[in-house]
Image (cartoon, rainbow, N blue to C red; front, side, top):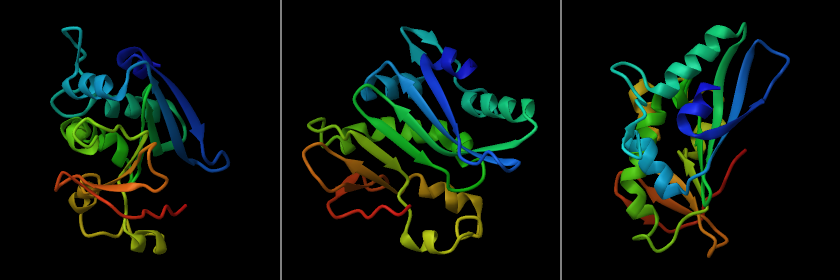
Length: 192
């Protein structure tokens, strides 16, 4: 797979529903880097001075690779969840609208890279898991609430509002306000 070669990783694909023509995929992308190194490489697009050319003028590299997979298949695919698994931490990215992960991944990685100092509590604690984004409870109660929002831009902002952080030193999670660059201490309830 081209993604594995270009991103120096291993990719596992899990098909969530094999009986329909629409397939929700869960991708596990395992890197041989720690989170700090990996975000730096992915956000800046450079490894040992080499330009990885992760994006062109219109589409991100990941988006182009995913589009090729869609075209090569008879089925319509979408990524339901993307797990970026680093040596010391995992970033879990959830779909918030059709094709949202492929469209927004580069921006999400750049925002994670910019926020690294803040969500690591000034480089003192590294979360072992980061969930991007956190959604309000009301989005889960209405099946089509995310699709029915007014604009795609409003949905895109959801990736850059609140994230869930899990640290080894705590049982409960913390909530990270990506816009305010601060951790909000409180209990996070995960809904399936």
